[in-house]
Amino acid sequence: HATPGRPTHRKARRPIVLFGAHDRYNFGDLLFEKVLRHLLVHRSGYLPAELITAGMIAVNMSRFGGNPDVKSLEDAIGMSHASARQGLGPFDVIFVGGETMDAPWEQGLHFLSKGAGKMPKQISKCAYMFDKRLLLPTDASDPDFQTAAWNYDEPVAILNSVGAPRGDLCVSAARLADYVSFRSLPLGVTSPRVPKAE
Image (cartoon, rainbow, N blue to C red; front, side, top):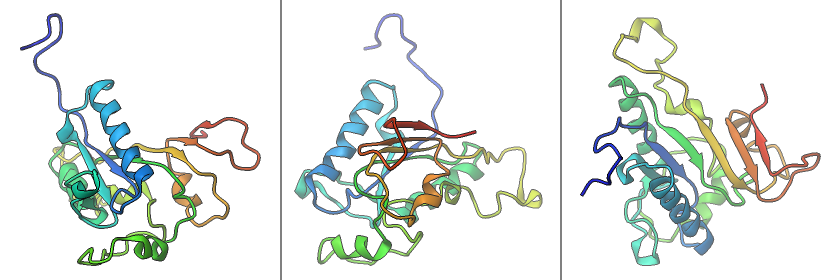
């Protein structure tokens, strides 16, 4: 039944990719995704179908209490490209958090479950962070390919509760984020919430 005073229909929102290390068994990483999904659905009004859980590989994590439909990053990026070409806009992304700022691709592969199946295509030098512009189709800047129906608005990227970087491996991708919150403060930062610098 509809709630009195609330509209029964609403405009669809651009989907959000929840990208993180929930493609392998680690209680904290599995919990991050569950908490964010719950808040986005029950506090922000997103529909479950508008939230795309993604990791390095496509995997069913339900036997560990995780998401049964984790997409690979490659698949999530492809879905975002298709959405942009249909005029709905690219997907936004939340980097779900944890100690991901210094995790190289090779380290991510090492921690994936044995027998995970097809190894992922390398998208980024970082295991759980990437340049948000990859969510745009590769022809996004070519006016010859654009039509009025296509929507190439820049994706919004949020780094949620990430550990402070000890090196510069993923810093270039992090600098493109629109909002960053740290769970441990990097040197010289006095607030756990750091809006994007203009």
